[in-house]
Amino acid sequence: MLSKINASQTKYGIVNIISLVKEGCLREYVNGSYRGDLAIDQPQLRATLGLNETNELPSYWDEIQQYPEQIGLFCLTAILFTHESFIHVFSASSTENMKGVIRRSQFENEKAFTNIRGVLVTSGASPESAIREDIVSYDFSRLIKSGEVGKIVKMLLFDRLKKTFWVENPSGNNKEHIRTFYEQCIAYEFHRVFSLTAEQFRKWLEGEGLGNKNSRPIELDLDDRVEVDTHLLVSLATKPFLILTGASGTGKTYGIRQLANSINPLKHIDENFNSTFIPVEAGWKDGRNILGYKNPFGDEGEMYQPTALINMLLKANSIQYRKIPFFVLFDEMNLSHVEMYFARFLALLETSRHEGISNVPLLPKNELLLLQKYYKNNNEFLEYVYEAIQREGLYISENLFFVGTVNIDETTYMFSPKVLDRSFVIEKATDAPSTIFNQSLIKNEVRAMLSISEVNKYLLTQYNVRKLLNNLTSIDQEILKPITDFLDQVYNLVEDFTFGYRIVVECCEYVLKAKELHTDLNVKLEWLVDDDQLYDEILMQKILPKIHGNRKQISNLIKRLTAFCKDGDVIRYKKSHIKLMAMERNLNITGYCGFIC
Image 1: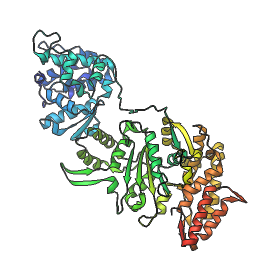
Image 2: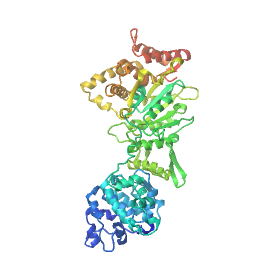
Image 3: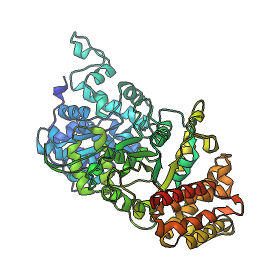
Image 4: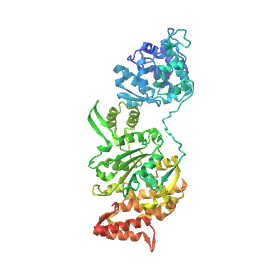
């Protein structure tokens, strides 16, 4: 019976066993010749070590010395299997990926919890930051990766089972004790203590090391090829904030959701794993609708109330998902003032890209500690929160991409220069009805087929253009000098709508990312290598969106830019020329126009 495993849970010094084993002083302590300062309660020591009446030290304590990296975790295992309540607590705390989360409330008394918490931290199963926490995450993966250590753990568990009156070859009829070793372990849920399945548990104890299967939760082949819109791809790879504008029904929302779904590593389990859809509502005045807020009336006092976006950020920040792009889609983004509800993101999107300057968290550590209370019954998200606490905050990670769709009517607001300066803008044009049948939503001239791994790597690789501009090699000059010359010409034309260093850097990076798509990923599309088409995209996505005003303010400017798009009778920048002509028509009719109209 498991109740026979019942050593004291509260006696002092049990954590010192780890130090004794690491120092190789265990035998000296047992036989009384130890002269150090460490003190351990004797009954608890005997229970942990598995000592018999003759004080003979089991052989597994000698064998574990061959694996110094796992000594602490092995000692933790020995301690957990000294009392049935520890076994029950850890089997109930499993997250089934060699990890779990325990809570103070699960323990019979305060001292038992603080003892186990100290052992978890000292053994290396939990971070040092957890030493004073009421909710503690742990990780057994370093122990379980070694098959040889698994064999040693089997010896220890075999020893513990014998204390429950289980015998390997029973002669009685007690059904509880006529099970095999593995049947008995599974019946007592020993496997769940390690957050393993029954089959994983058996394999490990038989000598097969196990990797953390959830450290890279890929459910589809990364070599699978997917259809992508290269306009979207280049813009997102350059800047993780994209605004999609155009007439209603042109596929703005569908396009980005299709991209997210095509590279979703868990789409057969959770189709929204790497994306979240946020319908913006009128009247949002601050960030609480997307960031959450402190709730003083929670079940356990003050706690932090999260949102779908916070859940996404927690996953994106997790080390196991850092190589997966995550997408946040704001539908009808301008139904409220973006400058109000998205203000914190606008600031941190920039500071997160400043090399050599410490990043600023979106949620600081004190708010993450309150967030623990909200997730008290959700082990998966508790793990994410603990990871964030270890990093001293929840950040806008480099694998997070924000996309907003916009329409313009009497219910919406225009974007300020602050927002447009920090984003790329893509206008989705309409097509003749007869052209929509029997064709992909992605037009042929921008469509490419890439593997999922290529898309992921492309999106997550950034150029340090600021450094390039300050230290140009001959190769860099060949690529970047024409861009800056082009931007100089535009700068001299736009007068009151001049642009700063940020836009210059992002335009340079845009061209570099387009060239990379052509050369490194072998995407043979004309617009990626034709400078006129690339510069046309720069005008459409970074320069023209900031232009707005009445006839007196911008009439001459639009004429100059329209002329700039032509070289004699040849139109060099076709999309920009068409857009400027449309803006001029609106200006003549209404007396006012802007890019997003």
